[in-house]
Length: 112
Image (cartoon, rainbow, N blue to C red):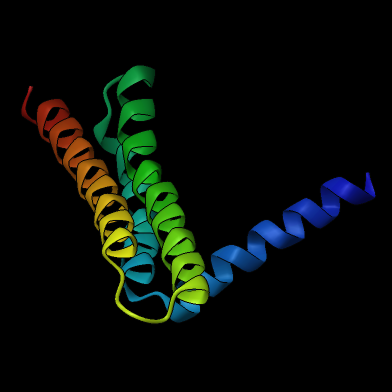
């Protein structure tokens, strides 16, 4: 039980760190606080609510992974490095794709 509590503690510390120090995550987090309740009003059935909510939460997950990767790479390699740049660009692309998934999901559900 103690391990589970510690795991939750570390997870919440990560979220708090993201809110305090990561501008993109802060914006996405507060938009999520607005969009998740909207999903319950705009979704016409459980599937739509799940799709609207999960596509919104996916952005936060990918943003946290992107930030984690960037911090790790910055820690191990301070100078410019081609492989580091490629890894960061790929992680940023993942964030962009999660945003496109969100846009497509919300657009299709709200349009039809």
